[in-house]
Length: 468
Image (cartoon, rainbow, N blue to C red; front, side, top):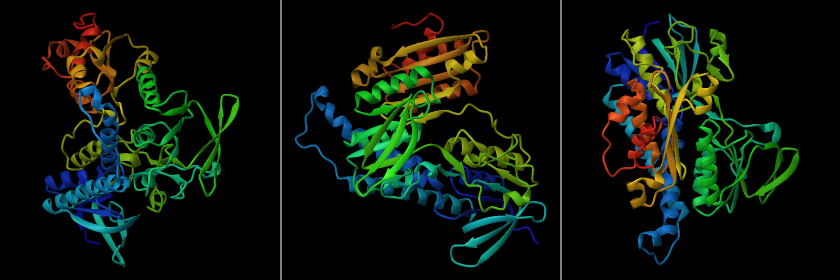
């Protein structure tokens, strides 16, 4: 069989489409297979449209505080259908943008569902086309970027039905806001939906099996976030194990165990946000000898699967399950294929939660550093004494830095507060450039800005803080 392409990418999410673009830039003849919509879950049902919803919630919630700014409004309300419509328009705009980028870079888009079989060198793809029929495609290299989907637990009733039990998909396009809502799972997805629906007036309870919410974050940030969310009316059951979910015509009843006590929670709707599972089924991976662990493809440092010419990136290849991590891996994988010295696949990866307040972090937590036996220096600075934060009325939260006590290297940074997801990139860049406390302390931060708290937290770690 003749080789059709240098690179065939299966899946067009932020890992797949970015990999395809980089391959085309390098002069490799490239095609991409997509079974649903260009942009994958991120652009169509995840990262982007959820932020549109969250922005609507944030603006609506801010109306409660207009008097603090000397302002007033006569009538407060919202049209939920228009809130959802705006979110879908944002997703559609970005979906169209990916389509434009495919044409611009001369990447052939094949609409359909692919499965792999042994081919000449790399596996070949047999694509069941949306338009009907099949197409067999042989490429020199195949990159799997099929992503992941919401994890469900049918054994205890945690399985979506689109009406009473939702995953993130159903939670984005309901006809109305539920009066009451139970969110199962307090990771970024669960907390973001809890924050959005609470902002629009829903009675929201979050159930988390682990000892604290946002469990991957630094313990201080988790504790501060819980208090901040409770002030906004969110309720929590932590740690609590779900024993059974029962549906009725009017809602759900969830039996939980908190410590040694049994409790039943009731609400109109439940959102299941208990993690994700990789889309590894029906691809023919087992027959090819691809190693799969806990629904994720095992890869080497370049995305290689051990099968000649077959690579895997993004959520399919394991945590962290982040769009920007997938894009980074996609570029690295393609540059490796092209024989270049690729970008560092182990670059620091930031994590962001777009609730109100926002949470952002990069590197290790204080507990992780101590568990590793590292000598550390820790600095903190609260926004309540930052000039810009005071002027903006956004004094909630703080910045925390963790430095290696021996080398001065920045090894972790953690934030909670207004728009900290925009600020974290400063620390990400610093860690990528292997900055020490000396470079950060010598950096001039514009005044007045909330990012001055980043400077002060770096100073505080070494007993040099100015404004505290």
